[in-house]
Every structure is written in structure tokens, then in C-alpha cells.
Image 1 (tube, helix red, strand yellow):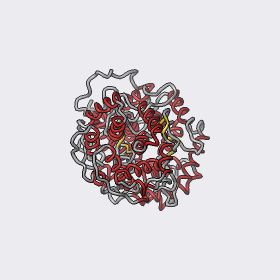
Image 2 (cartoon, helix red, strand yellow):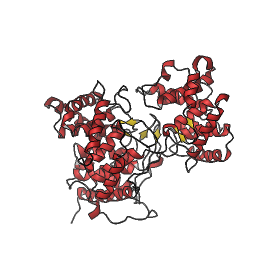
Image 3 (tube, helix red, strand yellow):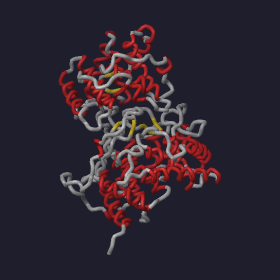
Image 4 (cartoon, one colour):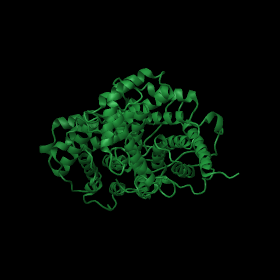
Length: 550
């Protein structure tokens, strides 16, 4: 009997989904959380090395040098990484002139000015450049942004004042006292290692703050990772546990496991009704809140009705007058991906019909003529398309849109899905941007979008085949970092590609006409090959691809 491509793809998608689900389930800890540490980065590591050398902390500095030496040799090292690593290691810097401007040039985003200041500050602090451009004074006022942003900008101001010889004009004693108040030996404020390093870099020039600097160095040494490097923050366990719980629930994972995961994330709801991405911070955000709420609603909306009700109130409160939703503070500019996540959640509740309609108008207005959207917190075009289309499709499915708006939303979804189909690579996958090599994360976003909205058998078959071939022997997927923090600097979480791929595979199974979900307890084998089993022929390692700097 001849096996059709669709049947073969269905079998492959089912096998890959089972293996991915088992991989994730095995990483759920007894308390129900998934440990999601941020991988080490050059940015924080370069800053840390200069500080440790200045204070003669030898053993830790030696580990850092080894990390940075290896990092600058990676095939996927960005221009920024190459410059920072070389400068921190006191090697010839490959490029320095106006690098911050070159990296941020062309970024049409409300954060672009502050990102340029941040990059110039870091480049100066690690010795990559001796020239800085005086920014406009108002750029340092960030009090209406996320909780750590004002501390970050104040530290940048102090460091740049030192570079420009503008101590008296720019620095107030209140600035130094604010920074000093954040340093303690037993913890890193808000768990934000980058801000902590910037604060240390700013204060260590001032003799009056030696004790606070010593306290801050004690805390930063405890944050050094096993590979010798440093990263942005210790983890994003709440965010990734919410994402993983939804993926496993859609794949019909064990109910006891799902209940454990959901009990853990439900217990971490903030009094505001939102959720924080990690226990190390007090800053709630819409993205994490939506991810957690989707998990709670998927598993048991009745059990978690109180948390969902408070979460919906939080999301509605975050909506801006333009109908869109920002991630951190309601006064910040609205963002398409965050708005789409909000619509996905609020559409399930009839009482939020009007906020949903306003949000859908915002999403439609943000769409480009080709069906794409501006990047938000992701390096992939397909990420924001998934979030926008998922939100609009949920609003349509739950009957929240009046006929003219529903027609406009359907047309917007059609444009986005056409965008995806037209940009599928010959190998069946998608890259972060059109013309870039395929990777599992970008492919997963695209396949999920098509599965939720406009299933296309040929596209789904090719995409599922790509994911099947890209999967590792342990069930995991690897991909270039997709998440930005701060924008537009990538940060890597190893479980994320597998979470996204699992959701895409279950949506693909639906698109191929099979029953919803993957019955793991009945169909998946009890174990999969051990880690030393060779990968399938043709499998590629996507973690070290060359990619365009953002």
C-alpha cells in the first residue's frame, strides 16, 4: 500500500510531538515548574570581566576570560559580541566607530533612543570605544517604564558623564544615592544582572561608595554561571512554565502533571492580577500573564476561575486609548504581539467584547500591506503574525466581532497566512526573516498560525517534515535565540524551541484532519532513544547559524 505524503507527515508529526512532549514532561520539577535559566551572554560577561579585573578578583575573572574567548569564536557571534568580547579581553577591537548607531539604525521603535544610549554606555564601559555622543538629557528620564529602566538609564547617565567629563552638569547626589540603594551582598535587585552590572560600573568611580560596590560585587559573583559567563537574569521560570503547560495540555499530557504545573503558576499571581516572569522580580508583564492564563484556561477554567477573573481585569486595565496593549505599563506605546495575546485571552469572556473589538481594530491598523507586522519582542516575523492571528481568530470563533469588523479581521488573517505561504523555504521551514535559513522556532510560529487559521495541507506537510528532520535524538529542538531582552539583543532559553515546536506539531495534526491532541499516555512509547543515539540523517544544528544582526 502506498503511503501518501499527508499520511507520512501525520505519522512523523505524531512521533515528533510525542518525543517533544516527553522531553518537556521529563523537565518538569516536583513542584510543577520548568527551570528556564537564561544562557550566558557576551554583553553581561564583558561588563563583569572589566569590573572583576578592576577589583582584582582573579579566579572568577579567569573563568570569564575562558567564556569570552570561546564566545568570540562561535560562528553565530554577532558584530556586537565580537567587539565586546575583544575589548573585554584587551584584544584589538574589530570595529568601534559608531557601532551603537549602526546597530540601532533603522529601528523604528520607541525604545531606539534608549537602546543607542545603552549600547554606547556598554561599549565605553568595556573599553571598546573612547568616543561617545552626548544624548539628549530627556532620554535619561524613564520613570514611566518598567521598574528597572530608570535605574538602568541613571547608571548610563553617570557612566557617560564620566566619559564626557560632565560630572557637575549631569550627576546629582540623588542619582548616586539611588544607585547605591540597589546594591546588597545577598541579592541582585529585581534579579536584573545587566542593571546590576551597570550600577556597579557607574559607582566604582566614586570613593564614597566603596562599601556598596563591595556588596554589589559579592552578589554578582554568586550569579556567575557554570560556564563562567553571566546573563540578563537568573531565569524566566513562570513564563516558560506557562508556555510549556499549554503545549503539554494541547498534546493531551498526563493530567496530574498538568495540574501540578498549573497549581504552581496559579500560586504566583501578583496582587495586581498579573504575573511576573520570575520570582526574582516584582514587575508584572502582559506577555507572561497571557501565557499563564492560556495554560490555566486550557487545563481547567473552572478550577482557576478566580485567577482568570483577576487576570482579565489586569489585562483590561493595561489597554491603552488606541485599543492596543503594551507589555509593562499602560502609558507605554501599544505593541501588536502583546495586543494579540490579550485578545486571545479576553475573547473567551463575553463581558470583554468591547475591549476585544478595540484591540482588533488596533491589530488590523498595524498590519503591513504584505501581511506582516513590525517586530516587537522577537527576531522572527512569524512570531508577531502568530500572536496577531491567534487573537483575531479567537475573537471570530467566540463571536466577539460585529460583521464589518469580523470581515476585516478575516481579511487581515488571510493576508498574513498568504505572507507565510509565500515565504516558506524549499526545505519546508521558515527563517527569522524572508530569505534567511529555516529554523525550528520560526517554523513553529508559522505552522501554528496556519493550523489555527487557514490549514493548508501541502504547506503543513512540508513544515511538519522539516520539524521531524530537525528534531534531536532526545526529542528536543535547537534554534537561534528568538527572544529579545533588552530589544534588540537576543537572549537564549533552551526549552523554548521545543515548546513552540510541540504546539506547532499538535496544530499541524489538526490541520491534517486528525483528532485534536496527541494522546501521549496511549500512543507515545514509554521512552525514546538515549542521548548518544545518532540524529536522523539530514538533521541540522540550528543553534550556531550565521544570522543578520538586529
